[in-house]
Image: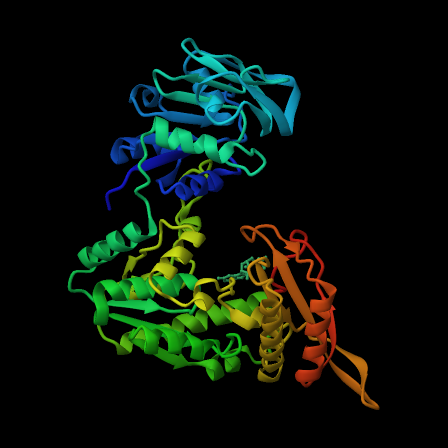
Length: 508
Ligand code: XMP
């Protein structure tokens, strides 16, 4: 796939993936590379530009993360952010020191020239640093200052080296997007050649080249990533792709049928549906420990999938919907650990496959755009995250069909009402849980002793942290009334108003 590349050198900062997102939003392809592997990657990939990220260390510590100084003489434009800026300044003969008074948060800065003044004169910028440049290297001009930071931005335009103490990648720096854009387009000469259409075309060709006359097996879950991956691969190799959809009986209401209707009927993919619900429930009988439940489901999945795969005869590749956040590891680790087997853990080893991961370079929203480009319906492309072990992690205590029925029905009502209130794009994830507790109620003139159903609805950007969604009372009222009236066995509705941490999004 030929396109211009920006290499983001990862020094362990917390916003590294965000920098990558910002670059990609500008239709420019980029890769995040741990600092230890960076010089090799730069030599191999010949990027049009380099960005150094922030990081928690101090550049003057003896073991501080560093990069071969040869990088500054390659003629490739470099933008250093925070730690990256300090590292560049020190490497080229400037000085970095810890300051008595530090800057954290929204700090006003004043542009005085250079690249930054092309996009802003004065504004706030997001700062988060203890150290700062106290003397720029020879040849660098000062282009922005703040009250406490005389060198908030410096540059050596002749060598195309730029260093900024603030974080242009975060929303709290209002001119940050524009600043990154001028760096990419005017300094690095980017042309915006990373588009969804070009990705689809190039990936189809890549898959054809890699697979040749081989056969590919796909473990289809019905989620966004595996669906997009299967449709894309089907476009490339048609009939030589076989998908196995293990329906573990722990999906949401009608979900299995919807997956089959879309992929098998509409897109004409060769999908084998294995209805294994009873098998999974039999294995889960009497098990109440959350971790034990997860382990049983994972192991049974591999068992069922392997049986099906063996029936199909020789397959050469295993298609997986691994995406970029699964692959990026913090650059401060010893090596870039690849967590790419997380979806169907253990399968490639067991079945001796070569992995095929056509989405491995995409972020989630890019996967969604590819899905849309391929004509996959919106209800799949915009699907909220759903855990591999399915409703089992929302069904506390023993997993039983009568409890799963309550979960499926109540969850369907919740989803209908959230969609009707147009909240489905605002709320990251929303579902019902069955806490496995019953309480006394009254219905008609009769006493009831029935289940309580919990509603979990959260806002988040990456599922690492989350806040509880402020669903309007009228919407909660409708959901509550409908669930107790329409789902037998339920007489009480609870709303989960805890953040993560200390909670998690799922209940198990
Ligand atoms: P927690 O509960 O850890 O969940 O806050 C964070 C996000 O991950 C999803 N999740 C899973 N996804 N397999 C998955 O593919 C799993 O086993 C799993 N467990 C949790 C959860 O739905 C949320 O979006």
